[in-house]
Image (cartoon, rainbow, N blue to C red):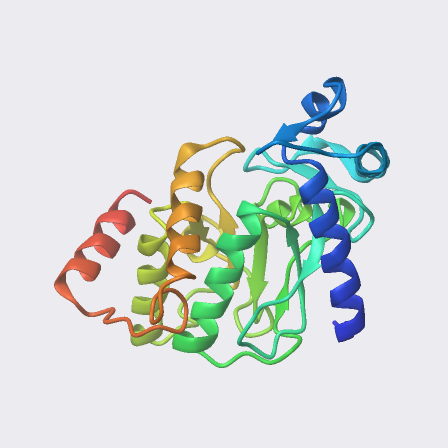
Length: 248
């Protein structure tokens, strides 16, 4: 995936603008005479931009959910919910995922994988895929909603198990436990896909909110979050990982 820094900056600007204009759900935002927050009232041109963004978003919607309950999208980087986003601290140039909370969680997974499981190259991660390219009855279909990623899919072919060394799998289990089960690993599925990591909760699930708050809090603390020192063999972390594995 070749995406220039200029393209990233442009996309980030668009996304930031839309997010600022739509701090309320669009339906509420556009229904009110003016949205005030902290004494500030958005001018009409900002509200007009929100209307245009809403219309563009409608054109990318598929109308049906992926297996985890999130609506699939027929395009990315077109004004909808799925955009190509950077993965800081890694060679991965960008991954197409659902912006916002889902992005925060999946980017965290990718970064920890890079730092602690195996070093990634720029094209090692696949995010969103077209609905027509995924098998609807399998967990890979969650990629069509921007809520799943495949990490090094060529190294971990679908249907096969045992692609990770024991120490690597300990880290994978630790990542899942750290995210309180909000993310599921495809290696645990009946038809395994060890490259696949996907959101295991539906939209509006409070567990996702709690995990995102935790991750964003870590981003403000030196040494916390992906890239910080982690003792995956500590009794507490191993216990949490094993407890989550038993529920799978």
